[in-house]
Image: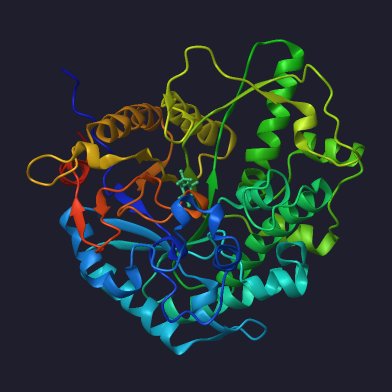
Length: 462
Ligand code: BG6
């Protein structure tokens, strides 16, 4: 029998969602890029389902948060939507109903014994700012984001003690500017690199704003780390894997924690003539405004080998020019999502943070398994028996625990997601929640994993 795994005192047991994926568009004065994209090309979204209702959190937050308390969560991460909180993007003036809504959500979280962690950006740039200024390509938008953050801090900082600037900023770079899975689906390496820089700058400027007041509270960033594992120890494979790691992980991790970009990445970008435009003053802001803590979303590893055939980029630039992904023989897969399952990476991430990132305080801010057609597993009592999800979590927690035992400074574990939610173009295809949602009537039912997490949280381990 496995011995009981005990986690550090005060460990956060919780779950993560985001404003655009849970709230629905009710009473929102502005549209995000995803709202706009759905309105213009609904056929690109699984089953034609968009963000209009999502999981109805705007209307049902009181009963939803009660349910999260019922399954034992002691913390919750969600995001404040720029398009809901802010009435006037240029001044940062708040919208009355947005203020009321987020005030209530925060108060209800606290009432239900959950520490709120508030994120400021989860892929939900206002469409107006893309149309007017080119979105994250523009440094003016960086400054407008700071105004939004300032407004949010002034309104909610008295009760929210943990903040994060971005969720998975590299996904904005990949989805919007390289691999065409987010609007505006461009393939433009030069712009991608500038956006990567501007997002780092925006994060640092928001941190600077946060620290101005010297109030209590901490601020971090949420990064999806996909550790790169080389095919072999050959010099070529190792270099390919290092460049992939630098582009997809360290391009945000290094500036966030150490205040500077990885040297190898800078060398490659300079050599290829695609280095971002920066000023001394901006680089100083990045250097001086690093995070207090890190959130790590972990889903899958990246398997990398050196490129065997040169890519025909037709004058464009792509990081892929330096590496190829490959399929690990005998890998375990989540067939619904097409992602490799590799819980060992939890340990590798923990040790990497400990050894190479000053052992900064960090938590797993997302980890989860999306499964299609979960109705198959409903038992006679109407409960989804998602044992596969419980097993997935247990395995990942075992490797996380090993990293903690070896001294990694991890303070929590959040799953994706508390209540099945709308997930961008995948909409409701794969379900991740502890609680299911019936899309026809919005009835929510606790799954077996919801009962399981309650025990884990109560016992601070399993
Ligand atoms: C994470 C994102 O990367 O993956 C979430 O932060 C997203 O926003 C989750 O919903 C799952 O994505 P998908 O595409 O499998 O539903």
